[in-house]
Structure formats: C-alpha cells, structure tokens
Image (cartoon, rainbow, N blue to C red; front, side, top):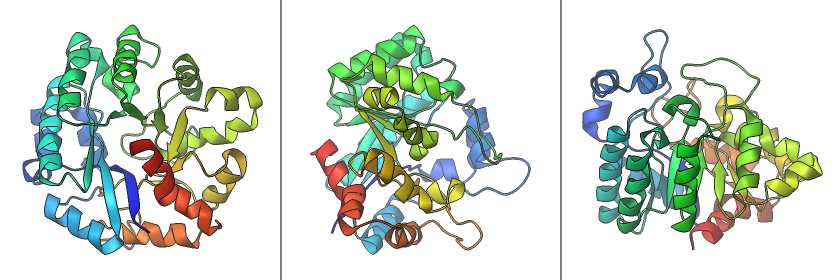
Length: 293
C-alpha cells in the first residue's frame, strides 16, 4: 500500500548548514529557539531533497506534503514558497506543497495566496498565529481563511498539547480558539497538527463534535509527546476517517536512538499500534487520498 505523509518540512542547504545564523540574519528568533537552542541539544534533523526522496522510497511513501514554517516575517514566507515551488516542479509526482504565510502582514499575506495557487500549492501552513503576531480571531487571519477557502486550499495549524513537558519553542495554543475557528468556517478544511493537542478527545462532547466535522488531525511528532495508545484512543472517539499520517520529517522522533531522520521507525510504531488493517489504511493513505484527490 502506498503511503502519504501529510506533515513534512524541507530546507535548502544554505539554511541547515548554520540554522541559527540563518535565523538570526532573517529575524526569525522563534525558529532559532526551536531548531538550534543555545542550551541543550536539538532534535531537529536536516536532509537535502535527494535524501528526502531516497528515504521516501525506503519507506514506500508515495507522496509527502511539504509544510511551510510559521515564520515571523512574510518575507521569509515568500522565500520558503520559492524553495517549495522549485521542489514541486522537480518532483511533481512525489511532492505536494503548502505555502508559508503570516497573516500579520495583512494585505501582503492575502495577495500571496493568488501567487501560490498559480504555482500549484494545495494549502497553507503550518501556521502558528501565537508566534506570528496575531490570534485566530484577528481580522487579518480571518481574511486569510476566507481567501484560502475561496481558493479551495486546505489549512494546517500547529496545535500544542496544553499539558505536558516543556521543550524549546513550546507556546500555548488555546484550544477553544481552534474550536471557534472550525465552527466559524464550516466549509474550510482544516488540519490540526500534532493530534490537535488532543482536541479530538473533547469531541466526546456532542456540541464540540458537531463543530469539528471539517477538521482532520495529523500525527506529526507523536512519539515525542504521546505513547502509541493515542491511536486507539482517538479512533474510538472520532473514528478513523479524520486522522492523517504525518511524521514531521526530518525531525528526529526518537532522539535516543535515531542519529539521522527517517520515516521507517515511526511507521514501525504505527504498524504495532492497536488498529485494524482497515483503520491503518485510512490513516496512512485513504484519508489523505480523499483530501488531495
């Protein structure tokens, strides 16, 4: 069965040769704190495009979605979008691109949507308003959502687990704002990353579940924050139809034993989780196929 990974990232060599210096030069302090903290080690891995494709082949992954980063400056978003436009031109059968965007730049962000649609991008994100200078309720963000919805773009949003261990770059993301957003835009397809901060557990409340019908949850970085029981727990609440396999590649999801990023180690954990073959097929491929065609 071919697989689709809906949550990966990619950066050119000029970035990962000295990520902290690059981030400081471009005014991206949160990026520096996440991928190259001054204290402690980093779990961020780096690969070039050829290595990404090779690792996909090893894991039998048909396609991956390249997600943008939640840059603090729209100029950096535009630069990443140029990287991705080149990547999907070179590998149109393997790569799907989402555009980086910062709604705090207001009209500049809205105008960028037309450009990325023309380039063949399929969505926006990964967005993290709490870092990017606005909230999910601000007018600048709502205009971006409206424009993206009209253009039939999906939107991926980072969501942080409200309770858990601390780590570099962690910020609070109030879950009530995500529920509000989904209810405000029922025709928009949202992907809430990292299991939505376990927001699907709140779908036990019928009023919450009704508002979340247009929301998918990806599994990005799951081994860093939850044990594999999360798969069974979430499926039992919302069913298998709105969960998407995402790895957060090239993040090193098992830093104690993983020197270089790969897809296979996390897939081994997924395959050992308590799910039926049909549930795994939905999570690893069928749900994404329905979203992307």
